[in-house]
Image 1 (cartoon, rainbow, N blue to C red):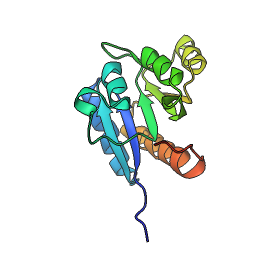
Image 2 (tube, helix red, strand yellow):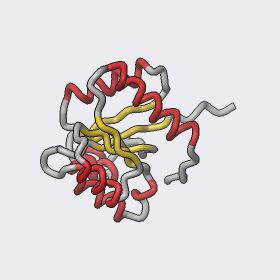
Image 3 (tube, rainbow, N blue to C red):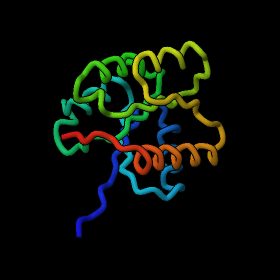
Image 4 (spheres, rainbow, N blue to C red):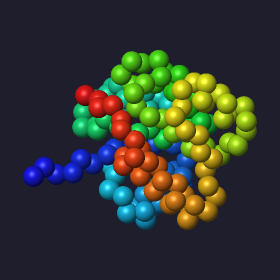
Length: 147
């Protein structure tokens, strides 16, 4: 019998408190997932292309959770690059950001995001979001396999 595959979520988030809250929320919802973090769009692209510090020992993500407002390269710029790459565009990208602006929502869908979620304020709501994301992306939908 083979072991169950652990799904990898790559979260691009520059705020250390938000990273910690996401990690705690994922633990609280009881879903077995490998949550990895990068702090900006440059690190995100290096991870996805296995460059620099990410050249070895990284798991290909099954899902990217992307903040919009990050230093060096913001989420919009990273999203454009991801969706322009024939291999990377297969990875679902969920934008999780503090913005509720219609212009941001409209723009990220135009750029190819799969979902847009405004960051919940309450921790219990964040737990619910993480659980819903895990159940939807890893139990409901069928995703293309990546090498």
